[in-house]
Image 1 (cartoon, rainbow, N blue to C red):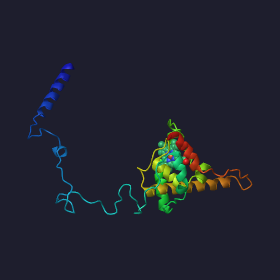
Image 2 (cartoon, helix red, strand yellow):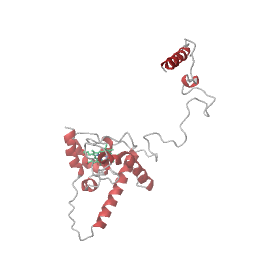
Image 3 (tube, protein in one colour):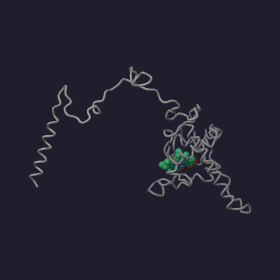
Image 4 (spheres, rainbow, N blue to C red):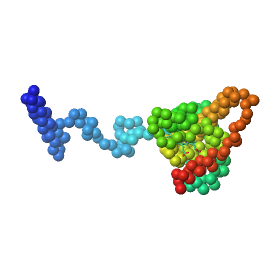
Length: 233
Ligand code: HEC
């Protein structure tokens, strides 16, 4: 047993040695050398292989560059900065007046739903009640907001939603890296649609005679401002 192991190792050592003939002008033995030592092309060199005659080919027609708009909408960057609490409170009215520039078409809502599932659902949940898998299935420290909360349905403006996606809020990070401007507005359309459905379902559950004791929504913006104060002194 020991002998056969020794023999095998000696063979392996020999095989290794035999691969060591590499010199300045020799690569030695290599499996599929054309994959190890591929030929590098300069991007704009003439090429006989590509259709446009140079080594770098242009993106296929109708390619959408990452981060750019699907509908070729030229949305302006978000004009509000990630400022301290006092300044956030000051710019809230302007943020509130900033209307969602994207049309809530069926396609926009579909993309919004898709991106919500990809980027938000893990925390805010499929029901948007703040009980996503990260909360129910793992140990996640901070409770994500319940997007079906009065404060976030009636109080918070679309602009504030965008602001939160743009810069994050406390434990929630920014999602500006992940979605184009247009896609972020589409997510807001989708959340608004789900909130309307949620309210409609509640109304059917409790017929008209039920007391209308739902307090007028506090502007979410100001409450969130307080939360921000804690994190960004
Ligand atoms: C990693 C978990 C996580 C993900 C993913 C996440 N959030 Fe949040 N979100 C949070 C937490 C935690 C808070 C509560 C922050 C606070 O109030 O301090 C929050 C708060 C919010 C709020 C409420 C702000 C307020 O006024 O209280 C909104 C709106 C929101 N998120 C939207 C989104 C959207 C839209 C997405 C997807 C693009 C998203 N979130 C993805 C964790 C997450």
